[in-house]
Structure formats: C-alpha cells, structure tokens
Length: 286
Image 1 (spheres, rainbow, N blue to C red):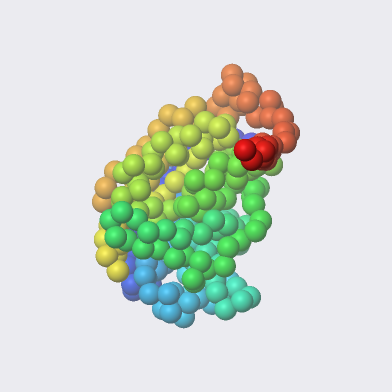
Image 2: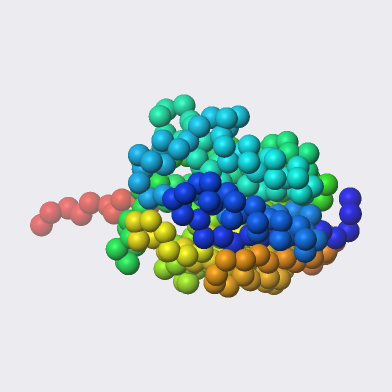
C-alpha cells in the first residue's frame, strides 16, 4: 500500500442536458488528472439535474446499459484513474430507480456500486420541496470497496445526516468515505461543513465530498463547497462556489495516527435502548 494519495473532487453545475453534463464533467476530470490526481470523485446527479420525477424515471436504464455508466467507464480507462462516478439513476425492480454511486477502476471496470439508503423527503423554509422517495427506491446495503489505498466506504448526500452509517463503515474497514452530493444551498450554509467534519472525526476516516454547485431546474440551488477532510476533522481543501476542482495529498498513515490518539472506535460497546416511560399510577377518586 502506498503512503500517499492525491485525490480530487470535481464540482460541476449540471443541468437538464445529459450529454452536455457528461462532457463538462469529463473536462474537469481531465483537469484533475493533469494535476496528478489518482482518485477523482464526482458529485451526486452528475449526469442529470432534473426536478421532474417522470423525466428522471424516463432517463433511467439498467446499469449495464446506462449511458453515463458507460461514459465514465471509458473516461476512467482513458485517464488511468480511479473514478467515483457520483451518482446516477439506475432502474430498480419496482418501477422506481436507485440513486446509484459507482466506483470505477483505471481499466474502466465498475468494481463497486452503492444505492443511496436515506431518502430526502423534506419541505424547506425557503419553499423548496423534495420528495426523493417518489422517484427513488432506497438502498439497504452498506458498501466498503477495496482500493489500492485501503477500504473506501460509499455514501450519498442525505446519508450524511445518519452517523451510524459512517461508524459502521469504519468498523467494516473503511479508511476513506466518499459523499457525492447535491446539497441544497439553504441547508449547506447551515450544516455542510460541520457535518462533514463530524463524520470524519467520529469515523477516523478521510472524507471526500464532491458537491454540485449552482442553480438548476425547478428553482433548486446547490451549495458547492466540495470538501476533502482529514480524520482529525481538518479541512484540507474547499472548492467554495463556482465550477472547478480541488485536490489534496492524503497521508495515509494519518488514519492510524488519529485512531491511536482517540481510540473511540475500539471503545464502542453494545447497549440497550432507553426504557419505555412507566405509566403514572392511577389515583383513587375522591
């Protein structure tokens, strides 16, 4: 296992034209490769940012026939990097689709897939409304993929708010965790940085979080600020606003150093849930 790894996050501003989105993402991936990146991560919905459920479903195909999956496999082979292909809509079994993240090796092979587990069904104070479960079928399996640099735990966007998933990935051997996202501007301004740092600290992992940026169909706005965070919670790179890339050199020994300094993972203990509150005893009348 090598001692260092240069990673990159790609921060595009995808829209409703899938081909244009793929070409724009590819240009940024090539830029990251020119900067020496060995692992390049793309954001959630990188191939299509579309708010209309019917069109999202219509664009989905089985993974082996998905045009974006084929495109990114060819791009990984062309550039010779490990590529996290953000996420894309892949046909599922019940008429809905899976929000699927792909890890592709330098030979263009899909070596791991992860279906987003937690669905973003919310009404924001800004008036924005999201019902992800209308189009997407939630996943049910956590994933740690093997890479030349150790285990890579895979998550997507709203998963960020469920710390038990990140703890489980660390216990399953993850040393890096990817969080491709299309985080909303409103919630991103409030929570993005603190949640990313918390997930890195509690798991003792590097966190690689490429995020979409800009204004999209249906009045949606995404936050940007793609992040690379070390296991101590230090932000190594922040893309801020706008389209572009960030890179950081990861010292892989840092994972073991941090976990030795704060061995919280080794101190996990099973426990029972809180007891149900007892009913107040009835008082006699009179």
